[in-house]
Length: 336
Image (cartoon, rainbow, N blue to C red):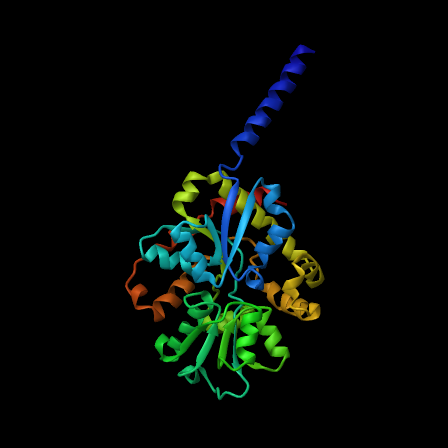
C-alpha cells in the first residue's frame, strides 16, 4: 500500500514538475498587428476570441497599427514582443542584419486583391503608371505586392503614388471619395468594393490559382514572427503562442462562414453580415493548413523582393534562418 501511495505521489510530483518546466517564461505578451479586422489576420482574432491564448497561460495585449510596416517598426523599436505580419518582413530584416524569424505560417496565399476604379482605363499592369494606389500602409505587404506587379511590367515603384489608407472603413472611404485610382487591399474591403460596383479586380491572390498566376508558385502570407533573442530567452512562451495559433488553424479548417461571423467582433461585419460571410468564404482557402512554411514559397517570396528592391538584389539571405519550425512541429504533435 505504501509503495502504491509513494508511486502515486511520485507521478504527481513529476507531472507537476513537467507542467512547471513548460510554463511560459513571459506570460504578458505585447503583440503587434497591422489591420486586425482584416481577414488576412483572422487567425489572430479567432485565437483571441476563442480563448486559445488564455488556455496556454498567456495574457496577450494586442496593438493594432495602420499597417504591417508599422507593426514591424514597433517590434524593432521594442514596444511589442511579437508580430502577426507578412512573412516577407523576415527576409527584409535578415538582409539588414536583424535576426527576425517566423515560427508558424498563418496564411499560405497573400489574400490581396488589386482593384481598379471602373472609370479608370486599365488594359494591363503598365496602366498603373501615374496612378494613385491605395495600400494599407507604405512598406506593407499590399505595397510590396504592387511593387512586384509593376516590376513585372517594367515599371519602378516610383512610377505610381502609394497612399496609406489603413484598413476597413478608411479604405472604403478613400476609393468612394475618388482619392485613389486603384487599391491593393484585403478582405472584407475588396468584396465590399466589388459588390458595390466600385472596382474591377484585376489581380487576385485570394486563391491558389491567382497566386500562382502572379508568382509562378506559392507565396506565404501572414506569419507569427519575432526576434531570435526572444525565442532563445522564452522558448516555452513561443511554444504556447504557436500552439494557440495552431489550434486556431485547426478550428478554421472546419469552421463555416457563419461560425466565423459569429466569432469576430460585430464591428468587423461593417454592418453587413452577409457581405462579411462572402468575404470569409473567399478568404478561407488562404489560411495555412499545417502552419509550416513551404521552402518553395519562401524562395518565391525572396524572388519577389529581389525583383524590385535594389537593397535586396545582392543580399545573401539564408532562408532557413527566416523560419524556426520546431515549435509548430511540436504543436502538431499535441493538438489533434
